[in-house]
Image 1: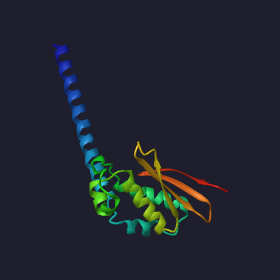
Image 2 (image 1 turned 90 degrees about the vertical axis):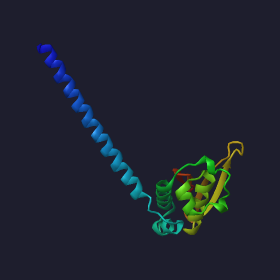
Image 3 (image 1 turned 45 degrees about the vertical axis):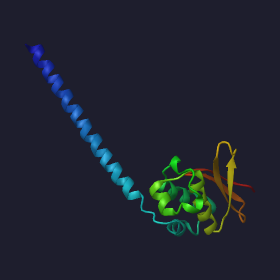
Image 4 (image 1 turned 120 degrees about the horizontal axis):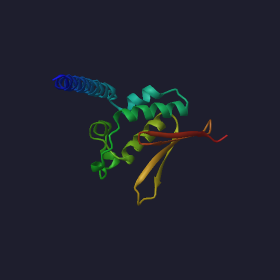
Length: 155
């Protein structure tokens, strides 16, 4: 009889623990989804330019990467969409592939006064990345979609 009561108490405790964990999980998911919704408040590439201006190349690259990461959504089904057809609003809402994100990285970098270059890795792979560089400081940074690969000074 005592053993039966202990089993019931054990199952009750386990049930309460599982229920508590589920409530915490749902609360975390709700908070995380609200956070994600709040993060995506960048409306245009001009807003990124305004937020990243008057910074060194390295700081500007970190700033650009941070903003691109906020809207980043890799959508392979948009592979055939031409860069000219992918405005910022569409990129933000539908996502894109490396050529779309890197095109905006380069446009923003150029607007900030830096030079840019698009590098294509083996056309068979169909992947590219952006290099932003500052002719005055000889710094350059490699950005790949939503990743700041790194920055180097050539001096």
